[in-house]
Image 1 (spheres, rainbow, N blue to C red):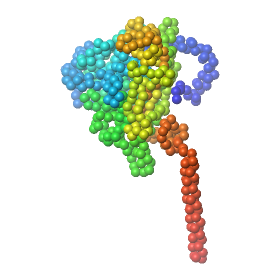
Image 2 (cartoon, rainbow, N blue to C red):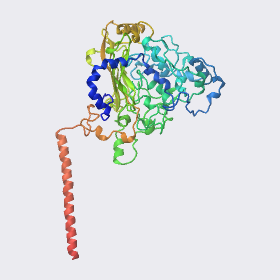
Image 3 (cartoon, one colour):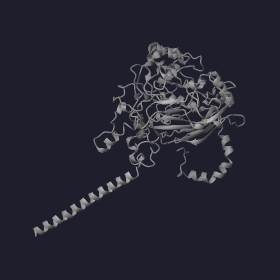
Image 4 (cartoon, rainbow, N blue to C red):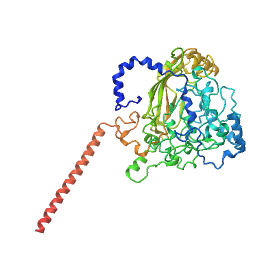
Amino acid sequence: MMYANKRLVDPAAWLLALLFPTLLILGDAHAAAEIERGINEYADTSQSHLKSPDDPPAVVRVSSSTADHAEFKELQGPFGSGPEVTKACLGCHNEAGHQFMKGIHWTWEYQHPVTGQTLGKKHLVNNFCTNARGNEGMCAQCHAGYGWKDDSFDFSDQGNIDCLVCHDATGSYYRTPNSQGNAACSVMFEGKQPIDWAKVAQSVALPDRSNCGTCHFYGGGGDGVKHGDMDSSLKHPDKALDVHMDAQGLNFSCTECHQGEGHQWSGSRYNMDAKDSEGTGKPGQRRQVATCESCHGDTPHPGNNLKAVKLNGHTDRVACQTCHIPTFARGGVATKTDWDWRTAGKLKDGEGFKLKEYTQGNGEHRATYKSIKGDFKYGENLKPSYAWFDGVMNYTTIDTKFDPQAGPVKINSFNGAYDDPASRIWPFKQMHTTQPYDKGNNTLVYMHLWGDDPDSFWGNYDFGRAIKVGMERNGKPYSGEHGFIDTVSYWPITHMVAPKEQALACAECHAKEGRLSELNGFYMPGRDGFGWLDILGYMAVIGALLVALGHGMVRIVMCKKRVTEHCKDGE
């Protein structure tokens, strides 16, 4: 399901086919022309708040607030930095800081109530950029605070909170890394206009999709890289992409479903509500959940006809997303499906480079190789994988030991089974990565990626040094010998809800080679068979059809006989 965008009907494709041998010869020259320094995919987020793609950054989003912040004397400035704006905000919103500092957007830490694991970006390893721990100078660019670059960051100081990243309505606000990177990354944010702090502070509004998307659309190293169902196409989607976020329709913001109180929002990939059995309620009434059922109930298909009854009979075993999100990454933005760190570190003329050899649906070119990260593969309009899921996930942490011969290491694994009443069939994106690990201790590793020093990988391209320093600085044992291992992570798909006309047809699952063909342990009509029992069933059906046919024929004959007799009597 991973493919490049090739239009066979395009005459240019035929020309490319004819010129293919020549293109092979010129491949090195083409690669040289594609050399670019830096990792500028991160810089795209600075324009993410605009009302429409054609709006200039000066356009301010219309606010429905009952207060005009431009009239507040506290916000007239001048301001020289974000923390100065935060101080002014908290002067009036004097409970906001206390509330916000209790949430995961601030702590980057989560204590799982079921598994007991300590999770959150502050601790976890992943199979994208591998770890935020020790790389906060770059990664904490998506932390809702100012200045987190190492362990000296003060989580108790409300002045470090970034109010604007969630509430800016101008589209001119942007975040930069909290510390200096090596030359390989130094070109980021060059040429950006200085932030007009007073103007931004006076133009705040409730968060919309682009505010949340500043981080959530670009996680993992670029637009759409991580989740597959969240990317920049959701800033201004049409109905075909998402019926709830349709810019010309319902136009839901993220907080329409991810309700919350006191700066705490519902919905978490660490501990999901895979099956909501607590009843219905419109958004705004049940603030502790972000489920389909909280609005649509557990009998969402209207009517008393057989089809509606049958569809509603599926909701206790099949997640709404399974039928109503037939494919993901379908807004013209590709998602990453494979990452190979082994090839990182190649240089041209002594410098790192990137190759852009994938053209996604919206026409933009994506990097298929970066010296700082290795090789990538992408996909669009992908069918999810499916599994039984009860909402509880277990994570492979930096302390987890595994058997390298046992197959791919699961970065996260989920609970769920067909005979578990709390489980339903859910759709997932699978991410495959070949990444470094400690061969002596059989654990994953922290890598020191970001920094203006000789040990950071994004500059020296030395895995051994980057791993050694990353582990030592975080107090983790390292054997001194690294290798590479396959890993896989699973990302529940819950956005990009298609119109009901595009929902999966019954035959897409109830078929021998249907979407659920790999789910075992239960009987599914149309997919499974029981040999002689099926034969008896077919015979019964055929027998019933023959009886019905015979009965019909008898009635036809008898009817004709009565008509004939009636005609004779009439004579």
